[in-house]
Image (cartoon, rainbow, N blue to C red; front, side):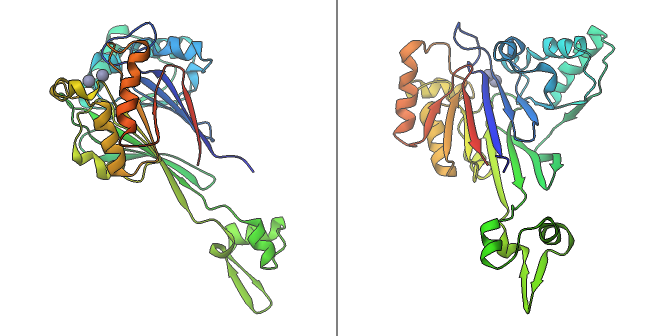
Length: 313
Ligand SMILES: [Zn+2]
Ligand SMILES: [Zn+2]
């Protein structure tokens, strides 16, 4: 049986300015159907992808949290490379109106005769975009405003999984799992009759499930985000500073590692990943961040460039 794996690859984990170890924000998420989403495109994103052996042309969706330069300045270079590589597959970019303006100007000034359609979806308030439906599995992108110093959004990818047949249950109930019986249960009638017994699909399949990953982009901690994040398996949260610099973090529309952990606890996520790490934390200094987050939420990791987290849906 094909594993439904989702890979989260951190391309850039710094915030504001890069360091020799950390590039500017960008996260690539690839699922078992090969669908690739790029969250933010900090400067240098395409170099990180090349270094990590990720195909540049295979991206399906780019979602930009806000128009601050550290999250968007890598986009013109990436688009230029996609054009040079003769991509034909359409590209969707989901972003706020300011980022949309930036993209329009780049396209106008550079006058590139793109070989592929670029669809810019300009977002406001809360909303969603259905990305695909393949073999009964579907993927949807949701967004809502974050709490930053300028208009910004956080995103959530939600996979709805087609219930899979449980062959063990079928056998227990006396159904021989032939291609015909499977087709009948899954596609034709959703039930099967054996003698006087009627067995429906729900008795021999898993329950339908959802798996989701939330990414805050830049944000100060705010309670409004919690209902949106609730139920996510993974939360990737702004963690620019440690709590000794809480005032500074909040003034600049950012969170501390402690803030991120409180949000993770209150929204009941399984795994918290800290990212957007200030350049002031070098070497073992970053341990401060993970230490304070772990006091509140057990399952925490701190992202670094090139880190890959795989989850099975
Ligand atoms: Zn930032
Ligand atoms: Zn920002």
